[in-house]
Length: 212
Image (tube, rainbow, N blue to C red; front, top):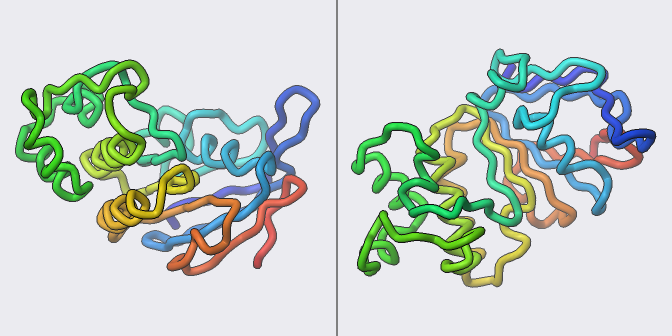
């Protein structure tokens, strides 16, 4: 079992967002979760990513139970790629020791090498504040390269392509395919058509998960 959730409840103050959630995901399984905006999809993903602690219930991700240990097992790609005001290299490595070969392999898988090779400073190019010096598609692929380089057993995709135009979306989808190969994957979206390829799809509504 790669992901196990039992009786998970989470609230922001008095606002109950997740109510007695139960979920089991097998190793290597790819599942999708749909839900309207504000239904709690992103909150659930942050709990699965170890960014939040469970207020009540159990979350276990690839054998890890504490947020600190869960974070080691998870790579996450969100709707709006979160880049640091640093170089492409630093955004991929996040300060961890990593060979240029591994970085370039991640860039190749994320379809970034053609663009990076044309930049004067290559991997040491500064991306700007909040990635302001690169396009949305480039920022998303840098985030995917970061996730590929981390090589975590569990991948979380939170509306990963919804903010992109069709041409950019196709390139990002190709990069995501390489990222998720052989991994346990949880994808969330408000659009069912964005979750094609998932072995099963669940709906998050009223704080609860339902089979579709």
